[in-house]
Image (tube, rainbow, N blue to C red; front, side, top):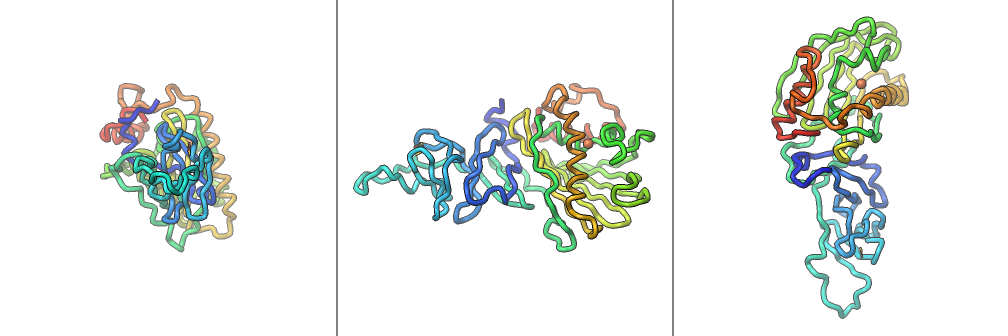
Length: 323
Ligand code: FES
Ligand SMILES: [Fe+2]
């Protein structure tokens, strides 16, 4: 259960790809709230997914030619501001539409190809992703997938380096060399940054083991932008998670690459998708499925788990006890 005072309500969260909100409405769930997304004449909109009349699901309705959302039950129409502007069952001579005939409207915007919603006044802006609009980069969505774990557990997995040799041998890690590389963590106003160098595994994107520098900017609560710099160029991953509730999330990964024009995009997508499936086997089976940010809740090793500790600390300092 997610209750009304959940501090996560005060952040922007991704809820869909922009292209998924096309002709019709789309129902999504964020922090336990059912939300309907649609495109009004002014752009993407997010309302509580329950009609003010009898509580029918607005996401089962349709968007009319004026960009109004029409309830499936009695056909009331909502404009982009959430006001009911038409009640078909009223006679022309009937009383005007009451001012209470108004949807609960949430903040919604589009950025980096995703639709973002904040349930309450957001504390931080949406994380930057400058490569997304840089013409030197090819960009693509590599993951849009549900996971049966919390957004906090998934994000912690994505930040964790020391699992690579065990869960991603041959792709990200080397079973014969499980020692975590030295890395540096720097606190930032929106979370923290950490960086390290490693030799990549041969065979995937280059024949030799190239040296890669990895710099990750973690943005409270569930977004990271990772820049991998190798001799061939830059690979940037913008990975974020929608907290559906405290036991389920949806992962969105967008990548930007300024090299290897000869490698088809599908190959990059398959590489990232395979990593996610390897992680899924772990993160859907951790106990508990939510992340407890209290440092006493788990056992931490000072060096390999320093990023995990920094992540828990950044959430705790934002008043987030569970994620
Ligand atoms: S429940 Fe929506 S119009 Fe009646
Ligand atoms: Fe992983």
